[in-house]
Amino acid sequence: MAIAIVLIVIVVASIAFHFLSPWWLTPAASNWGEIDDAFNLTLVITGAFFIVINLMIAWFVFKYRHRKGHKSTYQPDNKRLEAWLIGLTTVAIIGLLAPGLVVYGKFVAVPDDAKEVEVVGEQWKWSFRFPGEDNQLGKSDVRFISPTNPLGVDPDDPASSDDKIILTPELHLPLYSPYKVLLRSKDVLHDFNVPQFRAKMDMVPGSVNYFWLTPTQRGTFDILCAELCGVGHYNMRGRVVVEDDAQFGRWLAKQPTFAQTQQPASERDTPITDPVEHGKTLSEVNGCIGCHSVDGKPGVGPTWLGLYGKTEIMSDDAEVLVDDDYLKVAILDANAEIVKGYPPIMPVYQFSDEEVDAIIAYIKAVSSPQADPERADNGEQNNEGVQ
Image 1 (cartoon, helix red, strand yellow):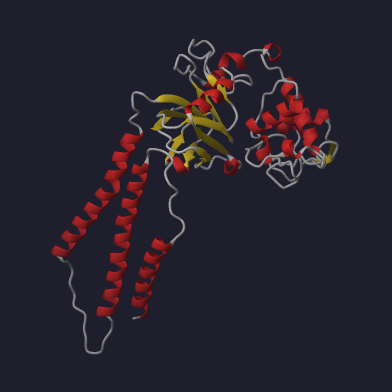
Image 2 (cartoon, rainbow, N blue to C red):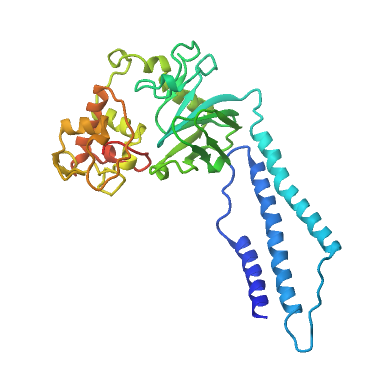
């Protein structure tokens, strides 16, 4: 009897929790409310089975409880009951799978008027690419990846030159405009996930996956990696800004084209005047400040607060002064000398001399407790750097 009562209480409590719970889905910020409908249908079907099965067990426990003078009967099979169970299970499975398959078919059936944007994932950051005035993305290949061409865009493809390159983890999209989202990874398995869009898909190295969506709400929404991709996975974050067409057009016009990113720094229209700001941008784009805090908090790598001028103890117990020479080696060949107590997990970077000097300038700026708090802010940025 006690077991039957407990099962009934569990069912009642589960139903009450469902209807009184504050953890409901946020409103969809894209056209994919159908994904919510498929999810709710799954919840109804599995919930109904949960309720029926537990109440049946409670009834059986009560009805067939041990009583003096009652004997059990042996019934090896029941064709009618088996037919009902097989039929109900079949209908339930179809009800679970069919709506999801239908919605997924629509999820990848891109409308003809959809524009394109490419999302590139790597440990542990996001980058983006829009087509230029020709409305065509240039080809890409891992063979072309270099410090000046981090997305591996084909420089010989005529369609590449006007592509807009966004290396910061912020993607802008215009309101009510359908977009085909192309997804590729430079290293390991990632997963592009914007919960409010109900958009989520794996990014598999060596292939290009895609889906489409139409943003329906203005605002800023988090981009998350939903596939474990290494120690910096938790901090592989970005954001999508949905805005009006005019605002989006102004933002996109400010982004450099691929041809501009291939120009020597001395020939660019906007030469670098502040190495500290340039170093801050490089640290954000390349994920450095996801592993190296600038406020003294422990991380995957040593904090940059108070780092410059400090004596670090290496894994072989040697003492090294953190100066310009040490930082250059640490940035370009991180595994040559590992600070004691930290794992050798920093990826290899290929920065130019100008970029290395800018990163060192930024480390110097945030190293002092009196550093500019705006330059030291790493609240919403991602991952690795000097170790």
